[in-house]
Length: 101
Image 1 (cartoon, rainbow, N blue to C red):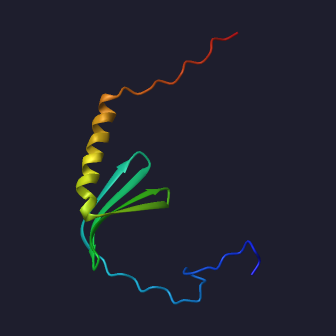
Image 2 (image 1 turned 180 degrees about the horizontal axis):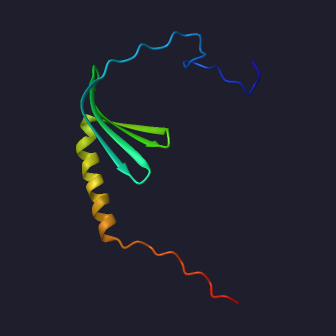
Image 3 (image 1 turned 120 degrees about the vertical axis):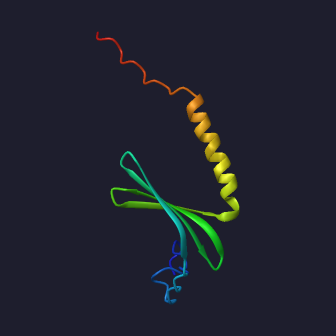
């Protein structure tokens, strides 16, 4: 092995068979469009427990976060605090362009 190479464990090309998919039951789904973004909120459950999967889709590019059910109450509290702060803190205005010379 060359000194800057690292052994590779897992992944598609590791020589190990892929993990079988985990069966997930969808309990509730909501979709929200904000400007050009689409958010999908899916409350799901599998053998490891319940979780909320939030997927952001922007022109076909998707990013996902997963929040385990025990963290949902804290997530809600922080989200409510952010909504409150957004309403209370005035937006910064863009600086005025310099006057013509």
